[in-house]
Image (cartoon, rainbow, N blue to C red; front, top):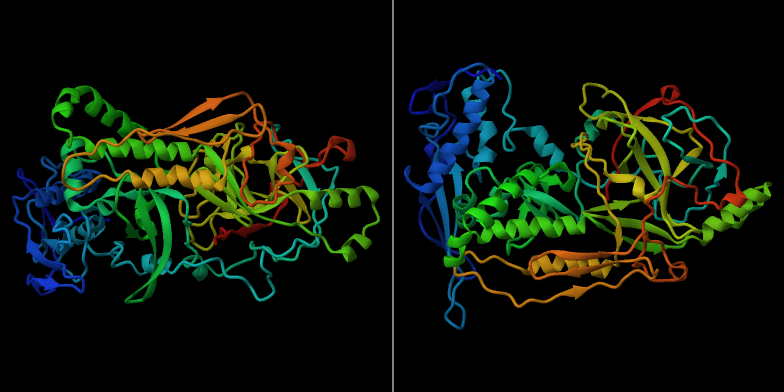
Length: 599
């Protein structure tokens, strides 16, 4: 982007081009709603804190972009908004209830000018840079970029007419160990199983490039993600946090995906996610662009700085003023609780794996028949809540392998089935891929199949690092889960964080201390979890964990199980199979573009 429409002075920066029009400014008259609340817009003066915040953040963004092109910027602050742009505060006053009490007045700032309503400096930043540029390319902000809005039309991966529901009975899978040579790294001691044609068509067939933009249903209910704080916090909360910890210390806040919504807009509809921030009372709807996967952002630097500022430097002052530091403390507790959720896992939606009798009749090998009969006895699951993420059959996930030193080389695994094997270990069957170069000018990497078409891998749950996101392909962090809990216990752990609300006004309330002990594993080698009042949970660890034999007989769809920390192993007892085999080299496999499966 070439910048030409700007002026640099000792006082700051000015953008000399504008597409604003005062006719796009809001009406300032008071308007009541159906519930008796009154709202109106009020112009924010240049010397008010909200205006200063916009000038600082937008100035920093423009200054950084100019300095990247070798332009010296003595003072990275915006002198004025572009011509005919103005910042307004939307004020909402609630009527009193029967007892005479009313909710606190809500004040949210919005930037008006070109017909769009920008909710934060970050949302206007891209458009400001475009205004300062030579206009040789179109604006890429969320309101101007048509491709961005196309991406919001995100639903589940469309199924072809000849493709069956993946949750139907698995009726034609055969798992016979093959003696082949594995031409991968020395640590890839994977067990490979032959697979006959299944009842569902592969999702890895060629798709037209235009369809790739519509497959961005990235997040799922019950997942914990990062949401941009400028949207999750009200204006008053954002100002308080700014005063407590300074600018840019906190960019994202841990939040629970509560709902996935399809809402109408000018171009048809868009997909929004209703987020419930941990330790906060709000529920906010955001597009995917304002959300990050949990593993895509590391908050360790900001948490260390905040802990030092709050608990060391300001300890005496905090004892005198209980309100100061409240939001920053809630942020630290929210991260602690999210990390604790990231350490647990839960299998869910158990179903019976069946094979038609007619298929058995076609099998001549006695050992293969025994293998299939054994697979039928294993409990199978449609999804697993792995830490902060929800994994399902047909999902693409990243693997953890110490021998690989870059994200480009980390294998990608497509889940076919999730099951509990004869050794009471959670394992997954599926196909293995490596990432190739994008095709047809797309930014989406192609996936190169590592195994033959009728061969699949069996891996342990401990081999999974996390979901593979098409828009975040460079994530390298792993979901280090180690504690199995039931679905209800996981929900309770998260619900406790959602109940600890931070009020917008008034002093902080002291909560009575209480704890919640989650049940230990059936095995004597177990780990316990306890939820504490400060938002944390306590772990009591007793060695390695395995699953009790009673688990296989448990008919419930939510159970306490364990994860294997051993190298990848076959689901078949060693006495009944030959040695593990390998697949053809990745270089000999056809390159196929990937569309990550979503639900």
